[in-house]
Amino acid sequence: MDGLLGRTPELGRLMSYRGPERRRGSPDRWWRHALEEIDLGVCLVAGEGQLLYANSTARRQLDETSPLQIIDGQLIASQRNDQLRLEGALADVQRGLRHLICLGRGPGRLSMSVLPLQDGQGRPTQAMVVLGKRNLCGELPMLAFAREHQLTAAELQVLQSLCSGLQPQEIAHRHGVAISTVRTQIASVRAKTATESIRDLVSMVAQLPPMQGVLRVMERA
Image (cartoon, rainbow, N blue to C red; front, side):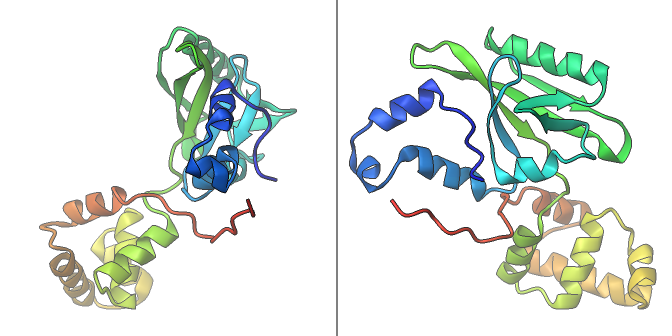
């Protein structure tokens, strides 16, 4: 499943382009591949909630436990109040307004931005829905960050624990090592990444660009 459930005016304009990129393959295909390579859920939605496209990250994220789900080709919130907020945000897209809304409660809470997309005449007709990150940093960006800064396996474990919100004492207890060992590893990570504090280190990781953890094969043109 490639996530494409409909065609928009933007795609029509892309398809009419005849430059070298167009001759190498469908722009429709290329932008879908591009969206599949980022670990952020992205949906393209018509004014009344009809789902036109969802990348694989969004489809995984909008499962039966999510406060927002894909039902019969529509984005539907499980709670009535959340559904009203979603409908209001999608209606405001027609006026060119942007929204950031939060659906659900507790650990399953989902934040999302609803952004207007213009057609060929500059009129907002569809919405791009970008789902909030599921965690501070995905596995692949974290591994790439560790490789870039030459962190050891133990230092990577400590960094992942810090980014999960654990304190040094909790990390020491979880890994079965002395607190002094954890503090030495944290100091080493900070030195290798040129950060002045744990807060700066976690902030640095939070700003890493999203990357999919699975390599995907491009369709043949």
